[in-house]
Image 1 (cartoon, rainbow, N blue to C red):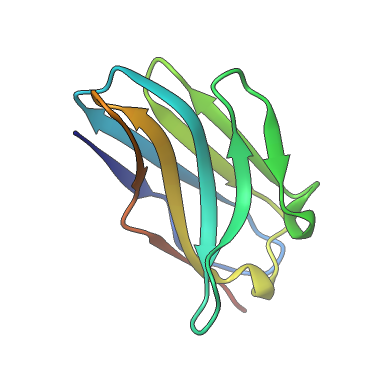
Image 2 (cartoon, rainbow, N blue to C red; image 1 turned 120 degrees about the horizontal axis):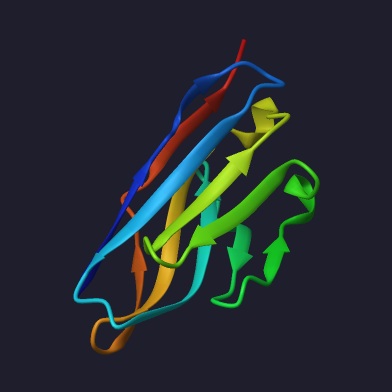
Length: 118
């Protein structure tokens, strides 16, 4: 089995930046895709960014040019650099990963709150 632990959320002013981290641990054989999602009350969880094991990325239109997803395969960690934050980016952010440990399972982190407000 595996677990994902997120860190880096918090309160930031509009225009500011935050960096989220998500570290996977456990009996990991391999990790395929890793992603960040976000959710606000009353709304469905939505994809923010996704990165394959080879480094290919995909972003929601609302964050293109402002957010950057990256990963460190040696550390089993995925990052989300968020710049030029807007109030509408306020949400609980969740990471997920396609982990072989030893069977392929999609794991989710516990979520971290990001609040963009003056």
